[in-house]
Image 1 (tube, rainbow, N blue to C red):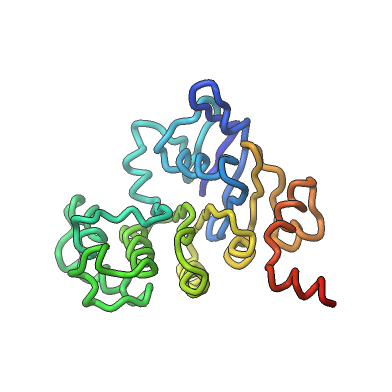
Image 2: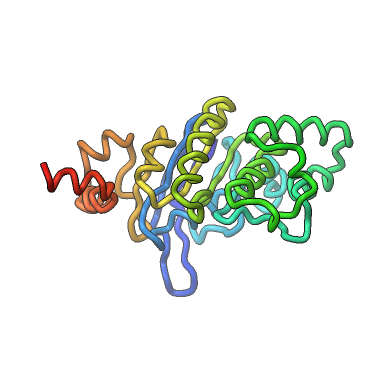
Length: 250
């Protein structure tokens, strides 16, 4: 569904993404993981055409991304950022339906889709007339997911979608997201720095460091067959404090 071939990206004199070739399988959840500044969010922005590569090619559904097809491709990709990116001056309803209204969807079609998604993300209809500042962080992320899914895209890109949530809300939302991903069967590409989140949600995990993909595989493969010392270090650094304490006391 998405393929990058020999892609590089620089900002000024700084090379942030070394030559990268990567494919994302249709219907699977792929995770880009690594420390801050490793290039994972840059990859995501390249896929949706927010930035252009210096070299190489980005393909969507076997078609190279270009200025001529960028708008059409974006309508087939849902995009969700860390803080949701909701417009504070618009109600939940307007935030979610904005693009559909711009594209001239009929009112009945908009309302049908709106209530399908409310049920999917477990939100009540009375939230629709509220503003983002009037709802909780977890609710805002669900609203942002509704907006990303509204046009029924083929691909869903999520950039640290739960990074700002507290642990309990984050855990609950992770469980809901996994259920949603599995029920919809969409191609999902998720950026995170949390190895537990990657293991829970991802079919395939890509570990990045300093603009390079060091290893691709399942969580089990990363743990038992690491191909780089950084992979071991990254996973060990995120061991649960409770597990660590239990190891020391045993």
